[in-house]
Image 1: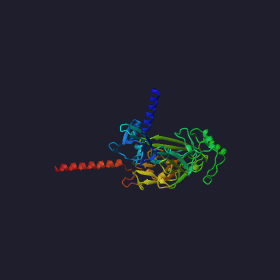
Image 2 (image 1 turned 90 degrees about the vertical axis):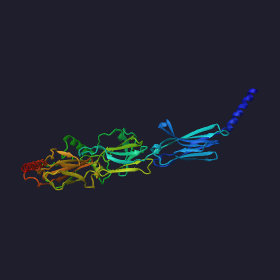
Image 3 (image 1 turned 30 degrees about the vertical axis):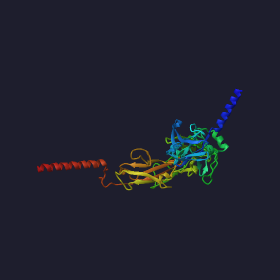
Image 4 (image 1 turned 30 degrees about the horizontal axis):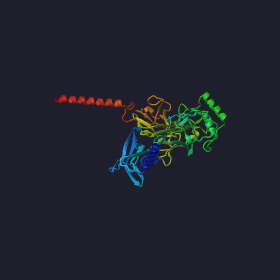
Length: 489
């Protein structure tokens, strides 16, 4: 009987010890993502029947390989160490320790641990330990958003349809935001391409018909002439039958373009630029496309993102479609961004517009022979600056009936510089062609050159002549000084 009695005694002793042993349970209240700059409080709740020994808060750093102590409470010595704002209190057997992080920054992002030690009930030697952790997520709203045109500036083609791409650039966000496009306030149905780093998600709400058409057009291909469905009959008249237009487009491709090329003016297909022009001081002309394009294009969407050095993301969303200048001119496109750190979407807008008559200025206003003349684009008829036209135009300068002063046929840029203009340029007509994918326009200005009174009649006065004259005067003064010195001696 010794054996069974001994076993029962041991079981009763273990049960008594278990009933007298202390306990410690710990939990940390969860936190939603915190916006940078906000103040957050970490809360560690624990319950025990023992006496508190120590509370320690750690921040996990270096990818989890190390811990940084940020708060300590030692009950034995009643010593508190902290470089954070923290407190703890006891209510019966329930404790709460809090750590306050004011104005959190990106470096505060990461895991935090709460370690608690209590004395076992009825003992001052045995310590029970427990810990809990929480992951603090700091989010950052986007810093900037902008919309640009890809491959800009680009020329206008009146004979061939072309793809056009808007790029929405969003910087400084964490995590990456959701980007989508609108046209005239309406959400655009997009077709995600295989090159997208992330799908368009909920923003792609295209119909089954659109998705079927998109499946047969993988990637971004040369725009096709699709059946026309007018969106706004007040903006453009209904097109001719598709068969006639396709035949016309085919004839243009076989026979070559009829009429002046892009940037050369002209309103009809049969008119050509005469060899000699009689043009007023300022003439504005516009060109329009000569192809039939679908009024219901497919919009292809790409989404690219990459991490930056400060831990935030840069997102580039691309919207590509077959441009229709007759419908897309003066259309308002907006890029919108949704982010958990924003109370409302962030937005950037652009209005597509063809250039309309650049405003030119000539400096100096009264040019004389030998001056350096600058002809500059100051803006357009629809606004105070060149930035009113989107996308950015391409500027080409030519001289009507001849070459430019340096012998070239044309010059590209917002400014044309004529260095030391000769009298032969008086009355010359200069043409500035401003074009972007939506259209082309020409503006002419006539250069008037006046005689320079400092020049000898019949001879052009240059800087070299002036330098030679200065050398002659200097040599004459030296000879006179030498003669005077000899007479005095």
